[in-house]
Image (tube, rainbow, N blue to C red; front, top):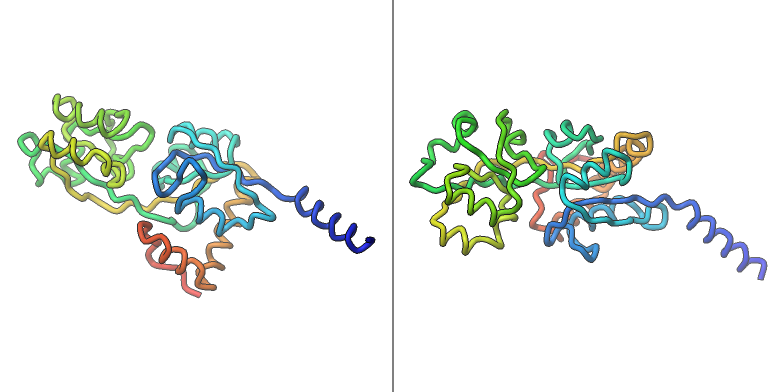
Length: 243
């Protein structure tokens, strides 16, 4: 009985000392699903042991989620480029965990493919999703029209309000029929590394350091390689961390 009580007390102590990690993020099907599944959440569970760092998942619009982490209302968020990290003044993971595939969407009668270079894009009227400045991610210092979603971008392209819509390839999957019907073309522009972002606080920096150390260890043990094999939609960092 005494042994049982000792084990129970140790278990309770472990639970009480656990430090929850509050993740606030936008929903990306297959990556951050509403039910807590998805590749990005799987990565967080791999990095943070549930007995010491149980996850608390909150979903929000992209910019609002990043602001919540900036204001220390949450600890961790996903999908940030280095431009976003600087803009929202967050702590960044040392390594990216994925890459965004940036696509240009345009009407060929208005924009020629030769215009789809960084030096020429900045002379065009660009659009991108709210809070996700793909122009800055591509190194283009230009103001863009913030669209609500890809369907809104299609309307703006057809009306001539914007000339090129910059988007992540996965965001276009559900509107491919509409893109085709509108006569819009798509062209690959770049792979942009994305990082985990942490709150700019002492606790956020502690979690960031923990994340970086765990990622290094998981590469050394081969668990990161296995993780990317289980999630082939993700692009692992290049070069990979070596033992």
